[in-house]
Amino acid sequence: MLKDDGSVSEEDRYEEVEIGGEIKRYRKGYTIDEYTPWMKKVALKSPVLGNFVSTYVNRADVRKAMHIGDQAPAWEMCGS
Image 1 (cartoon, helix red, strand yellow):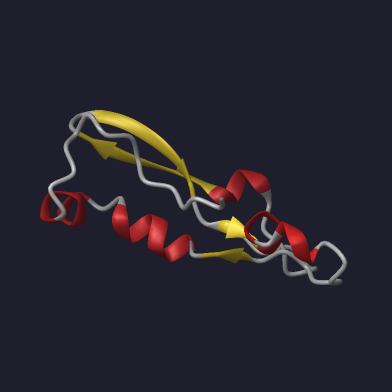
Image 2 (cartoon, rainbow, N blue to C red; image 1 turned 120 degrees about the horizontal axis):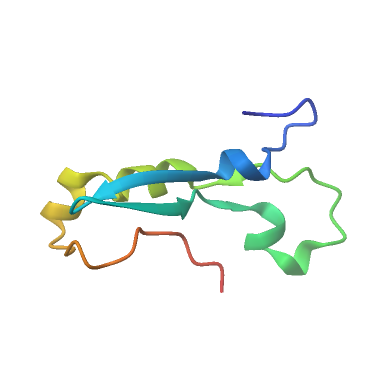
């Protein structure tokens, strides 16, 4: 849920998905601060980027179509 300042609480950044009968937890997206650490001097709030991608890629039908096995962890964006 968005806060008044446009940011997202840390607890709302995580979601769970059932994969092969096992519940796996993943972080949805990255904040601007996490994705672009070199921009620390820019006075921006930190909305979450790409959270819809994390949710989409972790759907059972998408994982099956991409041949991602049940033993693989839930997908998260990388920021490096």
